[in-house]
Image (tube, rainbow over all chains, first blue to last red; front, top):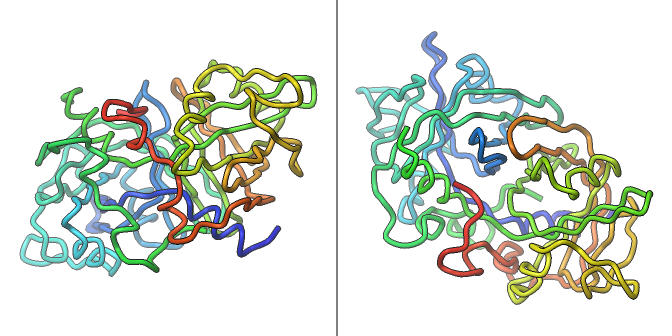
Length: 167
Length: 167
């Protein structure tokens, strides 16, 4: 297999950007930008997320057995970079962002246009990232999109010509 | 949970379009347009696909234990619709499209700009679509993209204002 070609072809997959959040109830809160996301079923509504296996975010999501995916809006490029860094909890904010606790306990970012909350139904622990499958149990729509919803989300390609996570 | 809001927020997830192909070696060949795809690990390179559980495509992929994801190019809108319909094998073509057998036996569409071939490593059989996790074992780059690879792929939003698969 040609590794350069593998990288190019896998990078054809387009990605949105999300802040994945979780609260394990034991003082650990996760909030990290992720992009490996897809829906995987309608009934029940399932979401798949690939999460770096050795990260605090992965540990927190597994302990919480729940997570939220906060969709980033087209104009929230700075937020994507904020949550590439470790989250900082102070003054009742996460890395400076206001939030409230959702149904599952996961932090819901008030300034994200929308978010879904999921209960973890299964995980697949293979590779350097683990696959977490979540059932959508709650939704938050803070800012209804004017046109197609998928035109309103921040995408990987909006971050810069050479920013990729995949390949 | 507000179902209208769930639909809107889940439809914020952007999707590319792919022709998923497989050959079970017993005379059954699958070729179907899919969009629920994400990479899920770098090492090994893993891909997740959500496939309608009661479809011939799902049966064929599971029997073959392998599949190819043929990336559709920005100009290949007609091909996406072709493979929304059941595949027809005649004159050595699939639904009129030339192909060759890949390493895994899966049909590789000659006119797709690129394709990856995967061996199935696990499936998660929950919901109306099953999650198939595949390890990338071969790659085909027919038409290297001029700019960002993810700018060269056909996306769901390119198919029309009201075409969605998700929500």
